[in-house]
Length: 88
Image (cartoon, rainbow, N blue to C red; front, side, top):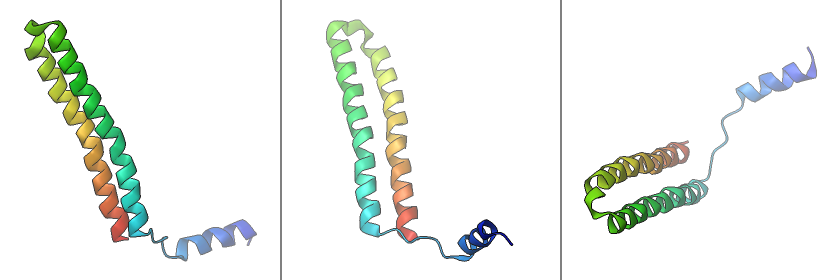
């Protein structure tokens, strides 16, 4: 057998790497920064657009809520990954 095959077989039989819970919590915290900034930018744009053109408030709010939901899904996915990483 070649050395690469032996190493590949040894890698399969070893246990998965245990991620420290503290490190995964820090990773989630850093990952939540992006959606937090995104939510702030979304609502800042809605407020600015409403101030410039008040009659478009309904349309802007609909766009704001839909994009808010998309950005929050990223934070929730990060939370799920945190729990998956800390349970290993």
